[in-house]
Image 1 (cartoon, rainbow over the protein chains, first blue to last red):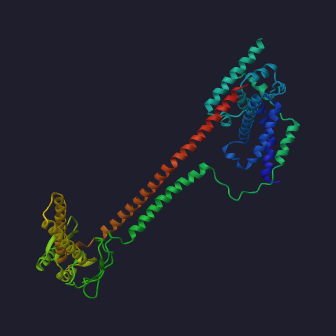
Image 2: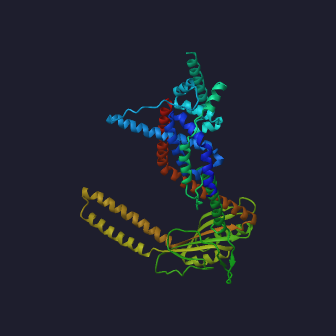
Length: 168
Length: 339
């Protein structure tokens, strides 16, 4: 085994949980997130030679790839659904309730499910993975101020929904 | 902001990869083939542009300067050549002759008397050019006066004179004299002794055939006119007669002028004082800069042409890329707005 291969394996081992957490928050579907995580590491392996540490950490790079893989999935899924709508062959699939982690309170779980994907992914990057503003903005492909605004709104919404649920 | 308790809860309860998933990812990582160092890796576009643009500019500027240096180094018509005295007391020539009118060029660079003897049986128009260098302004003035006097002495005349001595002991003179054809050889010999010959050219144009053709045409026209007049000019023939008379008049005058020109040779003289060394050096620098500027202008023209030709295609490509990005961004926003 050469050093580069060991390095990729080590990085995959090190950041698998981060990638999975990000994808779970983005998709709100644990099993889909697991499949997308595998796809992400396959894509990462293909592009491993092009990875430049000077342009960002491995975790940021992997999150960018994970986001790209997820968006590709949503795109192909959207096409599939449109095709099935056209020919009226869509089968009713039971969607499992979203789960964002073991041990989360039902209020928080419910509030997270109510957030949009864009809001959940910024929460995942900034709160769960604790990326700084610059790195999170780079993953999302937006400016730092836009990232801060989105995070602020998401947290406000989250806090509000958790409080409302607790009062009820 | 989110309360610390909620943030802590989110972090503690974050999703963790199951053993199965971890195994799947390990398999992926293990499927990597031994990496072989690429023989040649293309640098990124930005890095390439950072190197390529200054390099292209440097090549353009360097090329223009080298071209300017090479062009100015070769002895062109602007450069003052080193005159060489010939053994016969005449002079040799180092510089190419100045281009004359597009007539038969008989000779160049012969030291003295390159004019072939005139054949009295034929009509020939002679033209000669001499570029001469004289020592100083005094010599320039003497040579100009002597050239004019000689033209008159041999029965000719001065058609044009320009004499100038702007500054710094430098000066030049241009003369055009007409001398009888039978004295043109003497004139060339006389003028060759006025200074050092820098360039020399002699043109001879044989007009015998043209004059003979004109004579035949004149005779034919006269016969036609006589025939028309003999039979009485009808109103229909009046216009035709006027045409023939006009043509006859033109040809008669033209023939007379051709014959007259063939009787006098045209000798052009360019006299100049010796250039100073400093002036020569400055001249070379100026020429280098001028040539380099010319090359740069040409390069800019080529670049502009390329941009004009390729511009629409580039704009189309850019538009397509931008449109694709906008659509992608819209799709992302639409997808991510869902919960």
